[in-house]
Image (cartoon, rainbow, N blue to C red; front, side, top):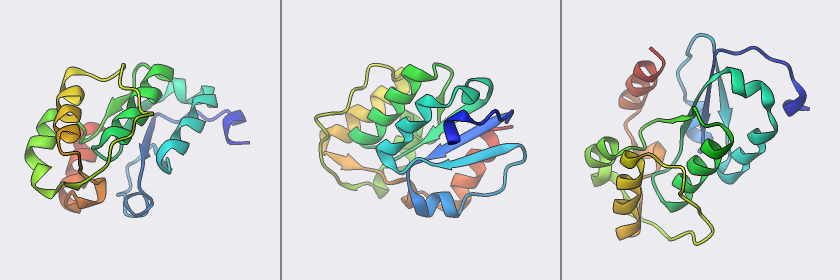
Length: 146
């Protein structure tokens, strides 16, 4: 079972979208995980992830920030990728009408993530991760793990 593995992996990148997962660049010493939306919470049972540098990249919408917050409650060192206020400001023109997720909790967001969430909810909007230009996403991933 995945949770029972005893891996020693320096970095783990969890992404929400399957197409983004399939197009991720190779990052040395990094395990990429397809989180499949809220299924990413299954990672909470993986104690081996505590030893890794952990990053989450999901859609910028109420549900995506809820997943980020829930994962951070389990893994406090979790960082987000392209989900902060600066990313929202740069890419909000690519957002499309979204929907609210009344089940999402957002208590473990940073101030930058919370600011982006506030903008997304105002529409409501969704900035799907696959809408960010691939070269820009690759650059952000490389910088995040530099």
